[in-house]
Each structure stands twice: as C-alpha cells, then as structure tokens.
Amino acid sequence: MLSIFRSPAPKNRPTVSDVAAKVALGQMRLIDVREIAEVKASGKAEGALVIPLSLLPLKADPKQPGNLLQPGLPVAVYCASGGRSGMAADVLTRLGYAPVSNLGGLRDWAAGGGKVVPY
Picture (cartoon, rainbow, N blue to C red):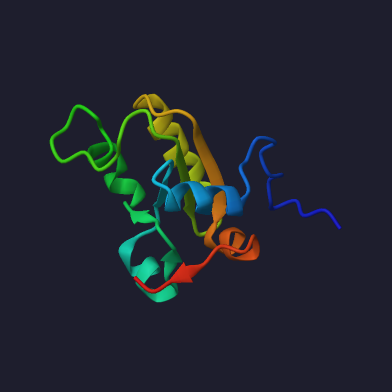
C-alpha cells in the first residue's frame, strides 16, 4: 500500500552499510540534525556528530572558526523522519559541501542495519 505521507527514497541514497563503513574509515561525515533532547531520548547512529538543524549554518560554515566539518568530505544527514535532514542537506549544499546525502530518519538507519548507540 502506498503512503501519501512518505516521500519516496532518493534514487542516489547510499546504503546504511556503505555510510557506516565510510564513517568508520573517516571517509564520510554522518550528522544527526535532531535536537539534543531527542538524541538523548532515543540514541544516535554510531559515528554520528550531533548538530541540531538550528545550529548547522553556524557550526558547518567553513568560513567560521570552530567549523565542525571538513570541506571536501562527503556528508550524510538524518533526523527523526527525513524532513529536517532534507533542509540540512540543502544548507550543507549551499555551504559548498558535496556530495550530501539525506538518509531519512533514525528509524531508516536502524532498519538498514545501522547501529544506534546512547548519546
């Protein structure tokens, strides 16, 4: 049955296992853009950096001191359901990061075999 509330997955979305392997090797950055309270309540993907969407433009701007991301490194983002991570992917793309992949939600990460760890 089709759900009218869920968007189809992007065609070029990397698999969870590919992202997990690249993150473990330092070849990709994984970012959880949920609020801290959400992350504390449900955990985060193993290897993910937590940067709430509201702080992303400041914390990821390569021109700002204290930038938490390495330009030139692929980035994957997720949130609770995929909406905020879609906005985060747009922000990161405008800041010059590429490629940027929206993985959807933490549930998608877990369903794809990704490990969830406490925050």
